[in-house]
Length: 197
Image 1 (tube, helix red, strand yellow):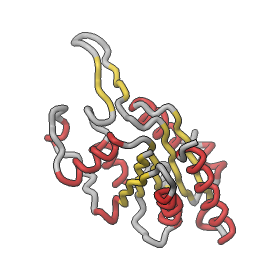
Image 2 (cartoon, one colour):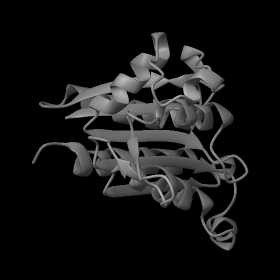
Image 3 (cartoon, rainbow, N blue to C red):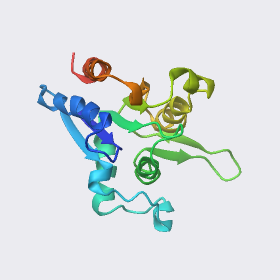
Image 4 (cartoon, one colour):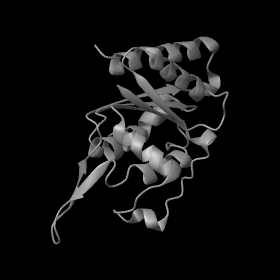
């Protein structure tokens, strides 16, 4: 099991980093290799270039590494804060550049017909871990936009069959016991989803 883990939070002391640490612990488990990218620490450039829009564009350097890791992954974990019901811009840019034709999906159709994306991801399971300062009620009133974004707009069209999302609410008011409970939940859920039976 090659588990690609993507972290998008600028503060090394954040709960997001601690949650990523629980996923990294799975690397010690037999049959699991965790491939980890901290987008801010790497200085990942989120800006899509005009050249990259060409379906025949061949990525180079760090972008090629990310594309290769996504294509090879058996499972996917994405960790980020909920900022105004959106992921951080660096993560949106990562999706724009890495979830590309030939890596995450193909596009099928003929001239004059309606085209459709066909998923190409090897990873059939994805775990999305979010933190939020708003309450669960506020997010529900907005229609849970991050669930829709990750599950229906990005991952399922690219071939992921199982998309699980956990959002840990009101981090700003959380206690140490709350945070430890969230870390334990992520550890248990990731082991259930990704460890070999």
